[in-house]
Image (cartoon, rainbow, N blue to C red; front, top):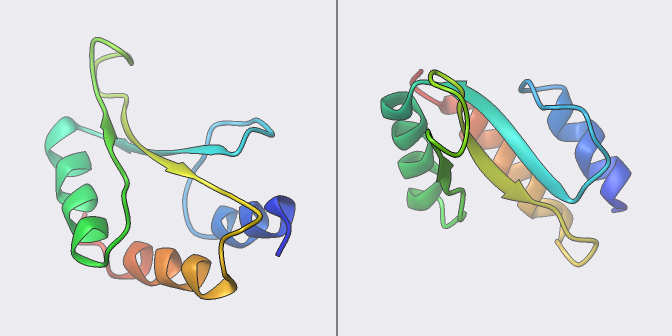
Length: 88
């Protein structure tokens, strides 16, 4: 799938910052909540590091996902599954 297709599929599920980059910042809010969701991604085998203050504003913690045209379609489905099942 193209990067635009991948982005469109994920945009249905979470709030992103605008942009056309392959880097997808998933807005979460608190550092604690971001770590929780990051751990859920890690358990699913997906690297989604937390970006936290002072790199971003207070209460602006987010996860960083990176898209690639080389990703198989099931990778996006797996990301969607984690986002649907997140606990925050």
